[in-house]
Figure (cartoon, rainbow, N blue to C red):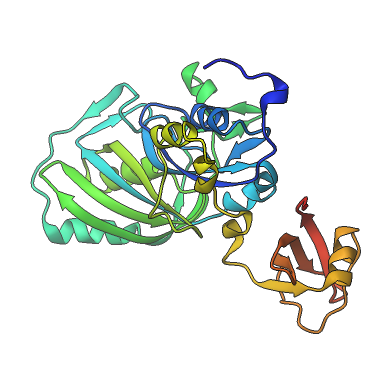
Length: 306
């Protein structure tokens, strides 16, 4: 992929729901999409492992201002869990650590174990993760054979559904909170069953609050980019779709001008929230506000508008 000259990039804003392919890092997928859009500025919202596929929201231009809020989103995955073996990474990338023959597991036992991991549970993040220790990603330390102590974190598994099973595999649908490591969940389930486990496939199927029924592959984007009527740009969602689960408020000209200048606004109908979508009465999304301690609408993050 040839590098574009700086003046070639476009000042374009919006959110793309990319269907990340297998074997490509999230950053590599981002850069390919950015190249096709010729976008000046782009970022992703929480990476997927190279061996994972599925929904990867990409933010272009002004949408990068809301990417941080998407890191807290609930997500859904479908994963295949291989019982009877463990690996260094918790997936197919690692070396096999242990092998235990899988014996018959009753439906009752499996149901009881899955129920143990539904609701609020604790996890210890894996060494092969992007979390940092003294500024260094854990996975880089793990590759050097260094293991450091990680703090437990509380997560929520809203739903843990068994879709299919064989004697030694489980196909699971997992609806979970931010910070959940599916590899760790699979390992913990395997340990609870007494055989160990790792994942052989992982697909992210949903990221809140988006409607993820329509995703774009890199091949889709390539085809759209070759059309002359800007069809590629139609793949982008409006910036405010990333915040659709937060309350909103409509401002008149005077109020809009005040918040754009960093000033607070007095209103009787300000939502009691730390994140409020602000719109000009024309319908244009102008930024993010919050209810201040003095009960005024205060600007939090403004969008650059025309």
